[in-house]
Length: 352
Image (cartoon, rainbow, N blue to C red; front, side, top):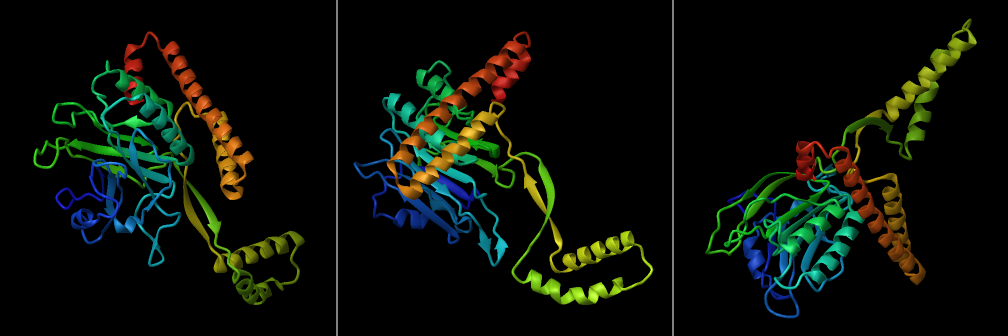
């Protein structure tokens, strides 16, 4: 990790047992932490992440799947160090390391569709990386075609474009949504370590929400604000005791004194607000369904009532269907409108 100056690394095929920690302890620098999920049923498999301890990542609870193994991490709601903000992932962020063993893929497509749809429903910024054992470099491969269509339906983008395996196939993938990724490098194969190549990239966490920054102002009102204001107002109001002023002038002066007094105890501070960068097919309908789905899940997790669980599942299915339909309609209109502009169509397919 020191050689490549990485802040976080995902590992697949760790072959670690549930109570085995020594290899990860030895691989982690002093200021790093790690988490791992071993394969319990048989040998092999296992996924892990090693990351800077200052990120303060924690395991996110997700379902277990038969066709692939995952470890999902998320940052806390508030990151602080010595009462100051700590550089690291934004709160609405999930990073996943995934390992899919070779074999039949019908179950994988079904389970990954459910997993990715759930993830993008609850999280604005998603990163999924790992060994998928899918020949995405072969456009004729049935699994590659089905998986590519599945990624598009959930707004995920795959950024690795070079072979990552000894036999010149692109098996190790990096999927992202709502995150800016650059400098993707597939390093030369090292036969001593693995039959896969190391893939590194830069991730701009500060820009992960995308969109335009808007500046707003607000005051920090605390329980002591009213008391402090009451203490300074008597002296401040004395300047208003000047006779022979019109009512409009006195009103203007009073408003000015009150504003200046409030500014002294609770000044206006600028705050940056970012608009989320949404997929072009993400409509008001999908946004409304996403919000209602989240509310139903919250009600179910709070009350544990079966009725809310069923309503949440129904709403989630509806949201997935509307999201797929919206994306399909968007590209249908795009292709129809630009059917004679091959360059535009090629660029659009490449960017999406």
